[in-house]
Length: 436
Image (cartoon, rainbow, N blue to C red; front, top):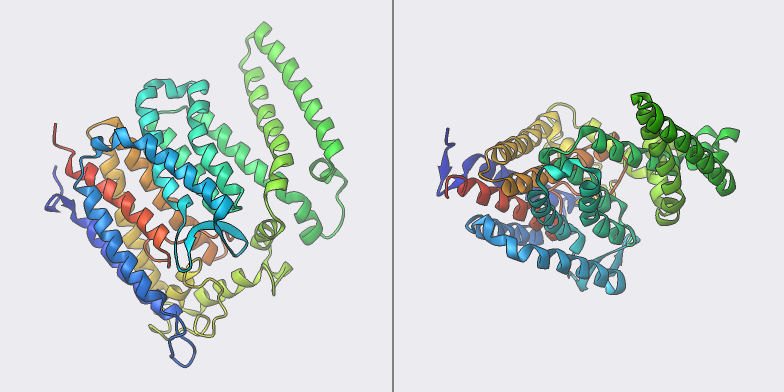
């Protein structure tokens, strides 16, 4: 059954996108007002310019046959890596992160565009791999396409942007038919790496007293001894598996491998993740550990969201935002302003608009005429979903503060163009789904 369309565009996605762009412009404008109603910032003007130019990008990409992009994808991927390296060497530092490349107010964030380039490159890889993606060597080889940009972005350091690549990888692999146990292995390992990295700080800031067992996570010598013990147990289980062929030995090796890799990786992640990023994880668990420092953002954001009630205080009537209690309120915490001024009803509207884009995106992925298009669409849908969940989760205190913008709504040209380029690809897949 063919859905309604205007000149081949998916009318549902297009309408939801335009409405979200409008909401974003309205609340970027609101975020720039002082308590007296005077404009303290004109960010909304740039937001309008980015929205208009972004729509041109969307339409231009949607009119292109997506298959014609294939020869250019490796070059786009390599260009993205080069730009990130250039950013590391010559980029501007903003809030402790060297992520912007440009001069003055003119600049781009290459790591945002790298998300699209990586999705396209991995879609090509998955198409060529076919059913082989169920095998560990092919899955591991494909993961390198994500690990390269993630490693460079972590060096900026921008943990939030780097973390978005991870669910995109899992989502696309699942769409391609990778084995669930392989994806669970990767997911559980990543979660434990984060937990093992954070536990020494949790012990100090939240528990408040020494826990002898936590020497495993803070003492390098003890950690190495534990790793050696785990390796020995895994070796014994491997011998048992080879000799007795029992499934229980397989799952023993599986579990030990997760613990071993997580503990080993936590040795390196603590050297990459900065202290302020660790504190973001700590204040996620208890923002009142540092109420005037790292916890301030979460406390003020939750206060703003809660004060909105059902119908909100009214557009341009927010107090948390206009007193500028909310840091980064036009970017990371734009949702908090929306919830304060439009209340629960307004947040439902935004939720509904994103739901339309996500559901239609899944429909497009499921009805794409070839696997390449399906993989691209699934990657883009996962990217949009991840940004939505993380940003809203940050605003209501259910996710750590990670500096991830709300696509189409938060202030910023690079993130907006990335989202609109992704939606343009969805439109191209939709328009060319019947052409052979």
